[in-house]
Image (cartoon, rainbow over all chains, first blue to last red; front, side):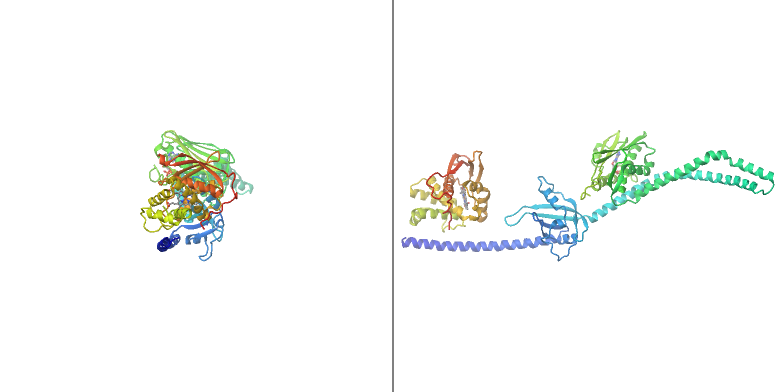
Length: 430
Length: 198
Ligand code: HEM
Ligand SMILES: Nc1ncnc2c1ncn2[C@@H]1O[C@H](COP(=O)(O)OP(=O)(O)O)[C@@H](O)[C@H]1O
Ligand SMILES: [Mg+2]
């Protein structure tokens, strides 16, 4: 190679080194700035993690290992601030983890948060509303799942309180009717007892007269006269005819009152546990309590399929039935002619279907989509607060995994259908 | 165009025809770029065309023929520069199917400001490949050279049949590529050696 060429090449090589050095410097500066930015982002992200009120878990998708947990999550799950949860199996705290992830991976998956239960370190169950996002695998990191859980304990408590309040409200509204329902039997119990009281006094007089004769006390003639008068006064034939009936009616009246009181008790003291509920029983209890509401506006017809049972919350179900019966009664009160309230039950595979049909005003189409909304009512103050159907819907769908629907035609009437799975709500849906 | 391509062009000429030839060509080229090219740099496409044209003239070739020879020269060097990426791509088909979605994607990370072309490649029912090439640079001659280089690299015959060309007004160049075993004169059937830059 000739020297001229060589020196030209050498000069170019040196120039290249210079350019490359400049480039490296430039890149180094860029890297530094980028790193600063990243560090800032990490700080920010870490602050954010701990400041959000939701419980944040980042979990490795395939290994189900917890990678990140924020303070809210620690508090919710009841784990020590210094206990290392990292690398622990997320399913230990979140049993339905796989379920939730698979649901997210399904095409067209909903991004809406779903309710479930998390398990705390000391084994308690906490109701939570969980949002899930999937982070796809990166060149250097595996796929991850970001979970944000919101503690529903307080909300559940408030909801239960609201349910209870609504119950008390409707009992309050029914109280005048119930007082009347109790008053009628009480009145004839009272009448019958007075009758029996005087009959008892008359009979005692007869008995006393016989007793005097038996013991030969006093003048014979006078004793006979007294006995005769006592027997006449007592009108034994009349007593023989009337007394058993008076006893019967008294016993029946007492039984009726007792039934109403028992019905009230079911409403006032709801058990908060699931049990096997006899559907016919529940409906009859409701009809007892609501008797005064419909008796003057409708004739009742029931078509029961016997022995239908569901697992559920008795107090809450009664409340739903009551709300629907009272609504039906109200709608028929608003029409002139006496209506008909038809309640039927049937089994459809593993589902119990209760139909409550009225011949009332019907629900105008333009408000049909609003009747389940909280506080939606078309009734005047004192007659409705618009919470009955909201509560009914919640109880049927959320507590019992069932369905509440209706068909309605203005001027003809409305039928509400309650669908209840016999086995009760699946775990986790409640 | 990235400096790595300019450097490849320089070594293509130097290795084939000598350093002084390259200097002569360079001296004769009116270039936008005054400083020497370095791999990570980005330079006007016109400079590459200008050097390539001067080279073609010097060698008494048409520009497409020169570009094609240059493409064939480049391929093993390009493949050799990213061993981690192409490690398990052991046939021309695999490499071609990966150019757009993997290789050039990685190139864009490695060389900021790179504008690699776009490829759409799919397998026809008869196992041939259908390839579409789109680039404002319209370097289909260079591309055909890359096909030649691919054949040599994997010791296969690659027959490229062209259906459309951007130089004839189409918005892309289209090829049917048939890859087959190389019949005779192959010294080492599995040889993919000699690929690396270093
Ligand atoms: C295997 C490793 C490969 C590497 C590292 C690589 C890298 C590059 C780089 C850096 C450029 C320059 C882009 C720019 O400056 O904007 C380029 C251009 C190009 N590459 Fe690749 N490439 C590879 C494989 C391939 C293959 C297999 C093909 C096609 C068969 C291909 C076709 C092209 C073409 C045609 C251009 C010219 C630019 C244009 O047409 O716009 N490359 N490549
Ligand atoms: N059986 C029914 N017939 C006609 N309208 C009904 C019936 N049931 C419910 N509605 C309508 O739905 C509204 C909401 O009912 P609900 O939630 O029970 O609240 P409220 O009874 O306190 O108004 C009622 O105000 C009424 O307009
Ligand atoms: Mg109501």
